[in-house]
Length: 151
Image 1 (cartoon, rainbow, N blue to C red):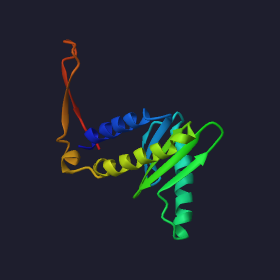
Image 2: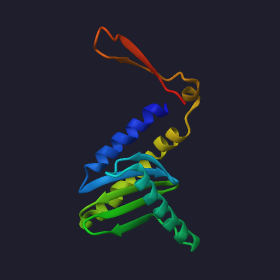
Image 3: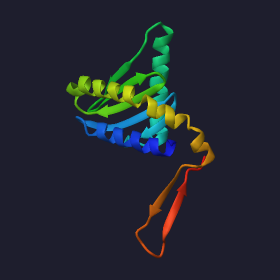
Image 4: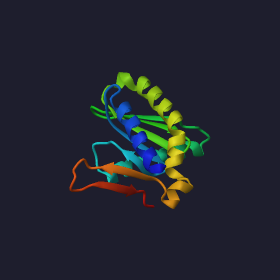
């Protein structure tokens, strides 16, 4: 099941990426990358995730519930939306679109909670390996192939 859920999360993020002036997206759970659509290597994105999580924890220690952080840099802005333990980091280039992107990101995080939970906590069918998909290569010399989800 989780093998089917991650592509649907990725396709939803791809659709969100085409809204407005978005340059990159990253969906994170706690301090781990779930899906990285940033134009940077994973280790750089992980450093950014750690930095925003530390900022959120700092403000939470003072009694503030942080739902969003917005950073402005030279030529690019970064919006981070939080929902529970999930964070959506968005790079965008037009500051006037931040409210639209924040609403879209919050709606995405609200809608994606079940998908994220299913991807992080696979069911019994995933563990037993019963989730199989037939792939037909379309070439007679290769024939049909069966792909199994391996954990």
